[in-house]
Length: 583
Image (tube, rainbow, N blue to C red; front, side, top):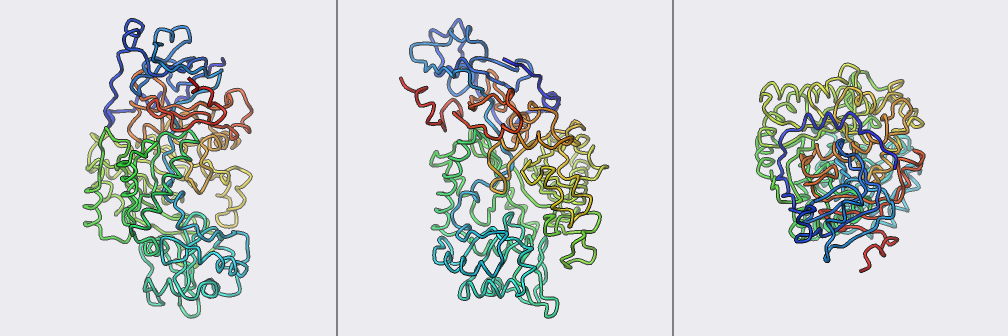
C-alpha cells in the first residue's frame, strides 16, 4: 500500500481548532481485553483505509461499536474485536475514506420538482423557446406561476424583441418566471411584473436590478439578483402542497448525497421565508436524514434589520445530539461576474448600464454586513458569505475584521467566504491572518480552458479566477464544495478539477481530500466528531471502487461509491457489493 503524508493544512486545522459545539461520542469499551464480552457491531477489514489522521494515515481495518470507531488498525489486530454477533465485511482491498463533507450546496432546491417544470436551452434563440414553454406550462405543479430554468441572459439581451414580450407570447395569462442556471437573473412576463407591483416607477431593491427599456423606462422582463429573488419568493410562497413537494425533492436529494459518499452537508441558502427550514425539520422528525446537516439561514437584503436579526436569532438551533443544526447565516456580498453584478474594483468591459461606475452591486454594504456579523456571531452563528468579485471579497474581509475588533478575540470564529472568483493580491494573505475559511467550487467552468469565456466581461482578470493554490499557500484553511446543482454533485469531480488547474492546482491528492473531509468538518464545528477515521469519532465513511492514489488524475472523477456509512449504518450500498451483506 502506498503511503502519503497529509497536507500542511491538516496540521493547521489541528492547531487552530478550539472546542466544538457538539458533544463527542463516548468511545465504546471495546479493546482486546474486553472484546469477548463486548464485541464490535461491525468490522471492515482487508481495505486500504486513508484515515486523514496525521498520526496514523493508513489502516487496513476498522471496528465499529454503537456508531463509533472502536478500533482503527491492522487486519491482524482486528481479530480481537470480532465476536459471534459481529458482522464482518471483507472489503477486498477497496479504498476507504472518511465520510465526505460538502459545505456549500442546495439539496432542497436541487431536488424540488417545482422550479424546473420548463427546461430551457442556454444556447437557444429565445423566440424558439416559445413553443417549449407553451408545452410545459400546463405541467406546472405546486404554484400558480409557470417556472423553469436554463436560459442565457445574453441570448435574451440580443433578441430583437424585449424578453418580456417574448415570454408574454408564451404565457399570456398567468405569471411566469424562468431562472438562468445560477438563479442570479430571471426572465419574467407582464403578469409576473403586475403580481409584484413593478412598473417604470419602481426603484431597484437592495442587491437587485430591474433592467429597463432605455427609451421608456419600462421593465424589459429581466431582473438581476435580489430583484429576481423577490419574485421567486412570490412564486414559491409556502403552502402545504408546496412544502410537501419540497419534502419529496429533499428525500430525492438525500439519496443522491448518500450515493456520492456525502455524510455531512451545509445547506447554502435556507430561505426561511419560503419555509425551507421547516422542510428540513420535518426530515429530522421523520428520521429521514442521512447526513449531518447545518442550515445557512438566508439574510434577506430588503428586510428591515432589527426585525430580521431577531427572527434569525430565534431560529438558531444547535442541539449537539441532532443531525440537524441551524447555526449558520448565508448572505450575499455581491452578485455574479456573468451579469456584471459581482462587486469589482475595476469596471466591467461589458455594460448593462444599471450603475454609473459599472462596478457591480452589493446585497449588503460593508457597514451593514459588519453590523450583522457583530450581532449574530455573538448569538453563536457562523457566516457563510457569497463573494465573487474582488471588491466583494475585500469588503467582506473588512467586515469580519471590524467585527473581531468590536467583539474581541474570545469567540471561536468559523466564518467563511465562498466562490472567490476574483481576489486581490493584497487580500490573499488576510484569510490566514483573520482565520477566515476559503471555500472554493472547482466546477468544470473554473478550469483553465474556460478562462477565456469571461475575458469579454472582465478582460485579463479572467485568467486568474478561483485562485485556490494561491490561498492554500498562505496557510489558510481551504474547503472544496459543489454548489450543487450548479456543478456536479460528485466530490470526486471536484477533487479531480482541483488537481487539474496547472500551476493553480492544489499540491496533491491529500490536500484535496482534506478539503472535502477534515476541513469541512472544521467548518461545521464537528472536527472532533467526524472528518477523519479515528477511534472515538463517529463511524462515517465511504468505500470507493478505485484507488485514487494510483490512477491518473483525469480518472478520479469517474470514481464510484460502493458503500456509505453514517454512524456505522449503511445509508447507501452499490448493487455490486450486495454479497458483502449476505449472512
